[in-house]
Image (cartoon, rainbow, N blue to C red; front, side, top):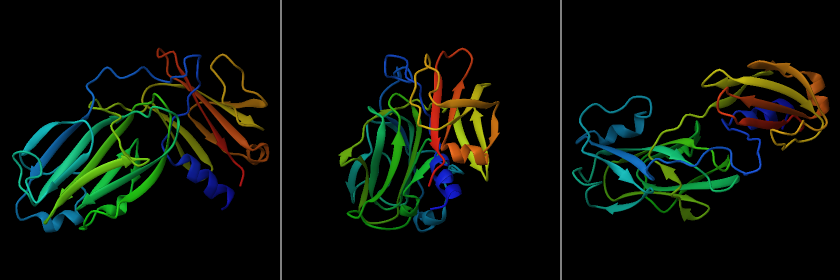
Amino acid sequence: MTKNRWLTALISVALLGALFAGSGSVAKASTHPAGLSVTAWSLPGQGSTFVGLTPWNDAPIGEPCYEGVASSIDFRWGGGPVLEGCGSEDVLVKFAGSITAPESGTYEFCGDADDGFRVDIGGTVLFAAYWFDHGDGAPACGSLEMLAGVNYPFEAWFYEYSGGAVAQLYVDGEIVDWFSAYIYQLPYIYQLRGNNLSAVAARRARVVWYRCSSPNPTSSRELPVRCRAVARGMNYRVKRADRVAGYLLIKTRVPGDGIWYSRTYSLGD
């Protein structure tokens, strides 16, 4: 893999990096209700068109047949109604909220569904190719790096065309239930276009870019080790010297929240 492709793969995933300040957490625990908000639409006679729809861009027209909260996505409706008040066929379902991992790490999410299923976590779409008519028993999987304490926006769509209906979401083999019905917005998203790296902030942020010769998982009270500040501001163009050094460290803080976030990117092969 080339350096540019490697860097693109690392940075294109919209993730936060955090500078830990003693407690080991990067965000306050959610005080909002646990679970996901669930909205469903019964659209008789339209099920054959669902595979060509993008409801995550355009919400279905009409009144929902169901609105509620679910602790997890763990449904095996069989041939019965898809949620109370909805039909057993030609149904669209939206799950929305936030997801917070208990520990930092890379998690494998798997969806088992009959029919279509699509999951978006913090802007990363998992198993998008699973949005078609199919039975359950052959789950689609995708891996995602997550940081403990960060509330990642979560959205999932499911559709049932005909036959039995199943919608289940697992993480590392277990039904996942790390949800809050409140939709948080990630404060910082890092994007790469060519050699131009940008820190996109929901609010006005302070951003410092460091060129480093080693990874730097440091706290907000520590100076970066073997690093040199090379720029400030929301945008930075990756230089040859950065690739020679091997790493870029981005430190970001929004005024008033008292938390420094950081992310170290490897520029090597």
